[in-house]
Amino acid sequence: MTPVAVAGAAPVLVVDDDPAVGKVLEGLLRQSGHDAQWVSSASAALEVLDQRFIGLVISDIQMPNMDGLELLTRIKQGWPDVPVVMLTAHGTVTTAVEAMKRGASDFIQKPFERDEILYVVKKELTRNTSAPAEAAPAGGLKLGSSAAMRECDELLTRAARSPATVLLRGESGVGKELAAHAIHDRSKRSTGPFVVVHPTALAEQLLESELFGHEKGAFTGAVSRKPGRVELAEGGTLFLDELGDLSATVQLKLLRLIQERQFERVGGTQTLTADVRFVAATHRNLEAMVAEGKFREDLFFRLNVIPIRIPPLRDRGEDVGPLAVHFCREHGGLNDRPNAALTDDALALLQTQPWKGNVRQLKNFVERLVVMSDADRIDAAVVSRELSRSAEPPLSASVAAPVAIGGEASLDQSRSAAERAAIQEALSRAGGNRTKAARLLGVARRTLYNKLDELGIDAKR
Image (cartoon, rainbow, N blue to C red; front, side):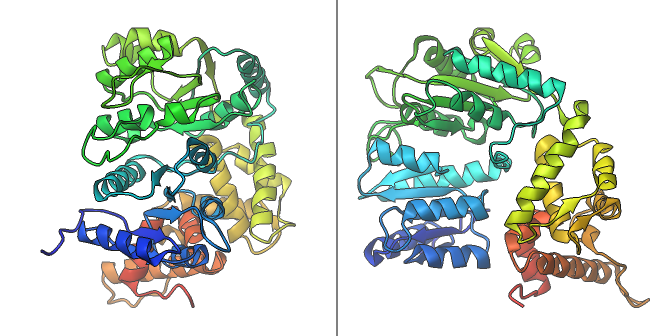
């Protein structure tokens, strides 16, 4: 029977040095309608990631030369938005925690079964489609030295001393996850795991399993008992990011977890205890949601024990300059431009911008400045040029100069020519790195890969 393609499913890359495992897993995924590819080494996996769009990586941990954990680290550095699921024959919570610390999305124990693999793949592809890409924390950098951020940092330090639940408030991109990391790192639990859950990226059943784990046979795909994020965070901190869209059922279970430190795995009857510290975050107005009956009042009170609001970047303009200088130094090192520096007039212009995406937007924009500038001295003219490009539609907006098109050219031809020029310029600036080129163009990697195919551009040239 011909497999039915999974609508909208992104390609899955399988990495395992054992052909008996790799080929079977590749075949299983293809039979289920997924675009799957198997490679036998971590180095081959990195080459594939650089050549084509990949939506999910499934990698063995025990491999020669470069093992799965090192591959995971490399993927998180070069392709931070690609989820990675680890295969382990050892299946211990300790191994899982180490993988989670390095950024793994999930783990699967060998020997695995068809339903379990398909369940995890569906969950991760759903999560990656639904959840917005998050920028990595800025290398431990404090989010600013303004009076507002000094006060915020002092609150984070005080909160870290207590086991009480913390609710971080603020707009998207202000650095709530970085603040949660700071609380964990300054607490008595700093040697324990820091585990992140993005609740709104998953359907209700998937979220319950993600949080609490499941017993064998709890649902289709649950072929063995599996610990959830609560168990993986034992002795450490569980960070619950963006709580605003939780269902009533999950809200009730989360209330019991925070209030009584007790839970059951999905499909289980044994009551377990949770030795974890809870930090939550949201950009939503939970008070208004409580008034509208969309969020439990008792859960809100349990979460809001220590509320800390992180101010938006526009309200602390004095932080823009120091942050921009730090990001310029950071991206200069990553892009072989160690002498790249922002001039005083460039910094002054950056401080006038609203930065609706806050610290995350500023960091991404400075990276663009570093890559797109021809000289190490990045002045206001370069900033102004890139700001004007950012304000226009993606791809065609990145053309450095008008494209000469014959008078008879159609609108589609003109658009294609402009997009081709923009993509080629970005690829040139990025040294052929497609992921970096996509960031420079302000589009998703998948969008860039689709355009490369559509326009017949060979990115290797």
